[in-house]
Every structure is written in structure tokens, then in C-alpha cells.
Image 1 (cartoon, rainbow, N blue to C red):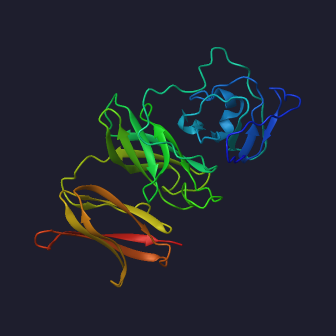
Image 2: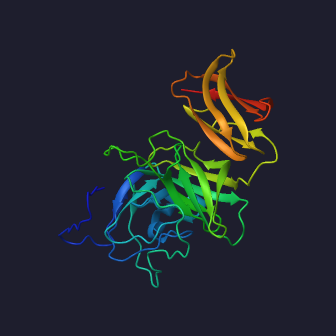
Image 3: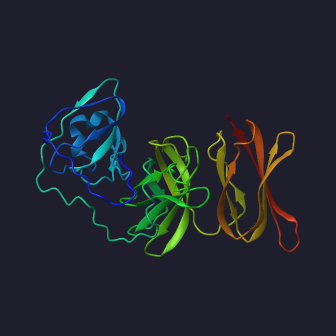
Length: 330
């Protein structure tokens, strides 16, 4: 990996490495060169470029964070091409050998043509990322076009992707620690998803309904998360406070809540003796579905109660109250 302060051209001189040269790959992650002077297809379900070893590949990705995931028959990678390096994670107990396959006839253009414009701009390449596959989104309109974005707890974009066949791959970018400002997520920071409907020009929240791979939505370099999501429609019919996710959790957990009308909301954390640990939220909220994150890194491990209390604007009386038990582990 080379980080540049401005665009430049680098020329490498020397004899060409033959396309059929053997590459040895170790168990777990490998950073490999691409020997052929022609492009090879990386799309699902064949993953032709790595077809000789595909049964031993758990994930592969390029410098832009696009990835192939054979177990889930998914790829958003463009064809592999000369001049590029790739990361390949090998699921094997011993060294395996790769010889790139022969050139293909009639391979499609390497850059995927997209007719849909971006609503959210792609985050900067910080040199470190993890992979997120949205396996399915429940509640979408058939035929509509959608973009999904991942957001940090502070509401800045850390990943984007477009839905194709109801699936979407995103690179979730980490922070570049060589700069003084923050461009991505720190290790352990959580993120959440939103979706944009291009036909209706509407943004909506997405809720996690199932995690197929991984444990929770938090950043770790080169980690993989595979999730099913559902569309969070409009204004809820009644007040609610969801279970926290994840639970048990380490330092950070996330909950969602719904308000059928604008209300004053107080969310507080108590220990099992009833002692107030932290006021998380206390202000007026508009009607709709909302979420919040509790960062408990300064709090000892243990069992806590997160209480949501909703008050009427006119009378000040409590009109809704609910409590969730959460388990913090260190």
C-alpha cells in the first residue's frame, strides 16, 4: 500500500512475471500480486479469477474494498486487472497454490455501468476497511433503485453501496490515523444503516433483523459482517423501546424507539440498586422512529437497566415508560 499526497505515475522496470507463475497462499489473509496482462472475471457465482482455489477462499477484496464472498455467492468486484494487488483470505490449514486461469473471451468492460446517481458520496479510501454484506432488505418496492449508506455514531458516512437483486456490499472505512482529522471509524466504534429510494427521493432507517455472519455492527479492520435488514416505515402507531443490540455487549450498544407524536423523551441508565448511572438523552423528539447509542466504556461491567420515559408537552405527565435490562461485559 502506498499513500500519496498527490496523483503521480510510478514506473516499474524489469522482466514480466509469466501469467501462469505459481503463487503460494498461507492460511488466513494474503496480499497477492496479479500476474496476467489480461483481465479476469471476479463476479458471482463462478469467481473465475480464483476458480482454481475457490473452495478454500472465504473472502477476497481489492484496494477500493470491493469484495467477493463465495459462501454467500456474492461479489461486487470488477474484473481483476494488471497493475493491481488483492487481499485473499484462505480457509485452509496449510499453504495452497494459485495459478491464474487462462484468458477469457468476450469479457465485459471492467467498470460496471451505473444508471443510478449517488445520493451519498463514497467515503475517502483511508487504507483500512471491513466488509459488510446486506443479504436482504425486507419491505422494498420491486423495481425501485436504492442506495445504502453506513453511518458512524456521530452521523457521518463511513460506507456506501447500491442494491442489486436485493443485496448490497459495502466497504466500511476505518480512520486514517496518520492525519489529524477523523475520516472513518476507530476500532470498536459502532455504525448503522440508512437507505435512499431513488425513485421517491426518500431516506429511511434500516433495522437489523438477523446477523448471518459476525457478531455486531462495530468496526474492526478486515472483519466481515453479513446481515438481513428491514425498512423502518414512517411514524409508528404506538410508543416502543426495542431490545438493545448487541446484548451482552462490550462498551457500546444500540437501541431504537418509536414516537407516534412529538414528545419529550428521557432515557437514563440505572444500576440494579436503582442508582442513576448516566442520562443518555433528555429533550424534545419529533414523531417517528429513532435510535441511540450508549457508550459504556467508562462504566464497570455488570447488569444495568435502560429506562425510557416519555412525557406530554401540555401536562408534563408521563405517558409511556419502559425498561430494558442490558449486560455489559469487559
